[in-house]
Image 1 (spheres, rainbow, N blue to C red):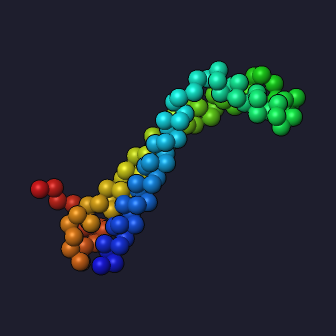
Image 2: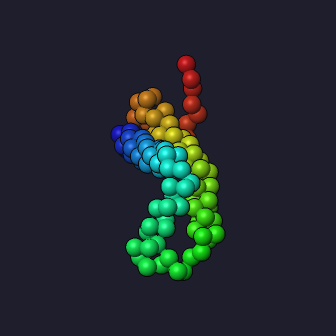
Image 3: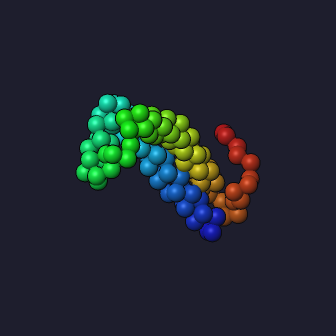
Length: 107
């Protein structure tokens, strides 16, 4: 029974990680680069930090954050899917003595 609880926990954690990073990935795809630069300028103007950053620095910040979002989010999504599958496979077999390290058999 303990193994099933662990499997359910892995299903939930992996699914949440997959959904959270998937949402972040889609959120990074929607705004254009110009919209992000304008939002950043507006944010800095509201916080009276516009004199601290030049236009080149703002563009570099935006480009770096977009690269980060395009690289890290899909990797985290794959990790979340792997964790979910790692919990689903033993849970599906349903035996009490199922170990998480048992080899998988696809019928």
